[in-house]
Image (cartoon, rainbow, N blue to C red; front, side, top):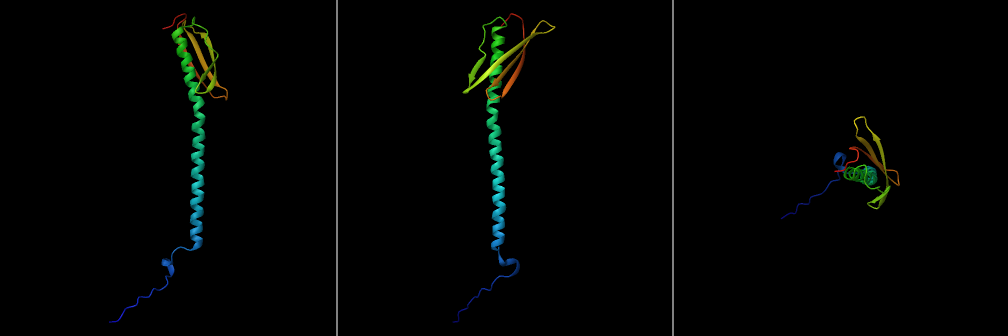
Length: 129
C-alpha cells in the first residue's frame, strides 16, 4: 500500500494572515482606546467624589431649616458651625419679614472647601410645631 503525502503550500494573497505591522497597529489602537476609557472613569470618579460635600451641605441646611420650623423664631440660639460626615459646615440664616406676615428664612450651609447649599423656608412668627 502506498502512502499519500500531503504537502502544504505556502499561503498567498488574502489568506496569508496578519503581518507584524498589522499586529502592532492593532495593539496601538487598543492601547489608545484603553487609555481613553481609563481617563473617562477617572474623571467620573472625581466628579462623584466632589458631590459628597455638596450632598452633606444640603443635609446640614435642611437640618437647620427643620430646627427652625420645630423651635420657631423664638427658639434657642443654634450653633453657627456644624460637623457632618467628617466635614465642618458654616450655617447661616437670613430672616426677612414678608408682606403676608410670614418670615422668610434662607438657610445656607457652606463647607470649608467652598461647596454649599441653600434652603428657603417660610415660618410663622413666634411659633414652632
